[in-house]
Structure formats: C-alpha cells, structure tokens
Image 1 (tube, rainbow, N blue to C red):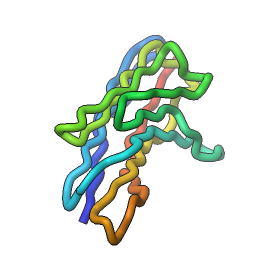
Image 2: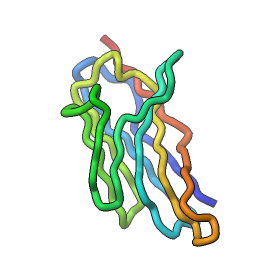
Image 3: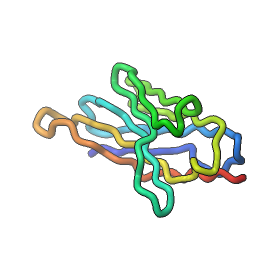
Length: 121
C-alpha cells in the first residue's frame, strides 16, 4: 500500500506565504515525477508545479516566480513554497506522485487527499 499525506495548508492574508508538504510512504520501489495540482471551486484541476527525480522543475505561468517546488528523494517528500499569495491561489492543493511499487505494477500515479489553501484579501 502507498499513502500520500499532505500538510501545510491554511488561511493566509494576501501577500503572505505558505509551505505545503507531501510525504509518500508504504511499499515504494522508486518515485518518478512529483507534482502539485490545485482545484478551485467550480474550476478544473490544474497543474501547478512538477519536479522530476533529477530535480528538473516546471511551473504554471500563473505561479512562476512566486512558487518553488523541491523534493528530498531520500525522504520521499516534496514541498511547495508559496510566496506573495493572492486570491486566485485559493484552492485545494493536491500532490500527485508517480510511484513504482514493483516491476509488475509499473509506474502508477497516486494522489494525496488535498489540503485547503485560502487567501484572504
């Protein structure tokens, strides 16, 4: 079994910062790409940031220069540092991690339960 646990969400004023964390645990052979998504009410889930095992990163244009994604391969964790938050960043944030449990299962995507980020004006 694989579990993803997110933490760090909450209420913050516009212009403030939050740091989200995602930890993968369980029967894990290897982890490939790790991603952050978000979904605001009435909107589709969107990709916010991605980080490969080798550390390559890419961001949605709306968060570029404000958000920074990082990971610790030894601890199977991924963080998202969010600075200069605004109203449009309010959403449920999800981590999605591509995990290989064993060679028979191959690489599969796993999702966290989501953590709420609310930015007040």
